[in-house]
Image 1 (tube, helix red, strand yellow):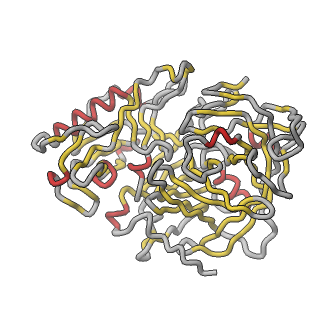
Image 2 (cartoon, one colour):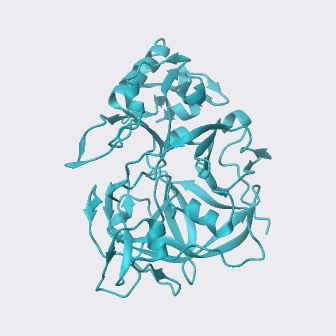
Image 3 (cartoon, helix red, strand yellow):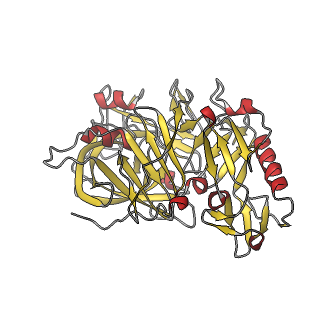
Length: 437
């Protein structure tokens, strides 16, 4: 049985395990360039897929379980392979569905294939889709520059439907899932080239995703993989996707936030909300889907109140949706790490702190207006479009992680984070994309 957020049943698909072509050159790391779409605030990348190779523009979903692309509109490839029911690929993907499709054979519609549930988190809609494999070509890196392009012939992905592209940035034809699943791109790339099951996210207007271990070098010659602070990654045993198989855990990356400080002072919170409950609600996850950090309503009110008190002498201006606390920009001085506002600390196990400085806490909504960039995520137990939804107490959004390096160590189940790279006089836009090969 599948659980749903808007589940539309279509025909199912197939697969084969990703193993790199036998190259004389074996990369130690791969990379994808990332751009931020100004209208949707989505983080975009591009891969080359299929035979002949076609550039495929994708939205990045850090918590997405796998790569999915639209197979209904112009998917042509002589190397496309559907995953047959009960195959090793279906098992690896955790698929429990097996079906027929009588409008084929064609990509996305074949008989005796297994499938998954491609999900668009921006419109909270899923469908069923055929599991398949095809070739992907991607740039390798030495950590400082792009290097040779390498090919992976049997990358597992899922076919989505054209209607699932609603709400995605212009030209996007799928979603690149980087989540905690065996067929998410980080795990497949690591398996293909036998490098460490690590990847690093460095977002900005122009950022980068590294697959594999460091160094991750930003101009001017700063290895931002050094001096990271580490905290455990927590597995939520309940899926947070729009649709899933029964008993499937979440692909999202959760961390153990224990509290919040503003200007070094503890914010009074209902700390029980910070733990993951049996039904999967609560806890803290990191998201590239949410443009700004969302907080459960009671936590949001506490943070807004505490921040307001910390800047009580600063006059406010009218709120600008979706933000509540807004100020005249000239009220704050400028520092290396953004506007000179009270710092916000996320308190982690062993009293480690993830410090959010002004560049990440504040949003410049106009020339003269600066707002605290946190939004009300609503109560934990609510009904979404008439269908039960499993929300999270704190969702750390894109704006709060820009110009911070985040390294996800899948083998050790830990997150390494840098806090603001502005302190190191560099940014996530400073990778040198000049190729050396």
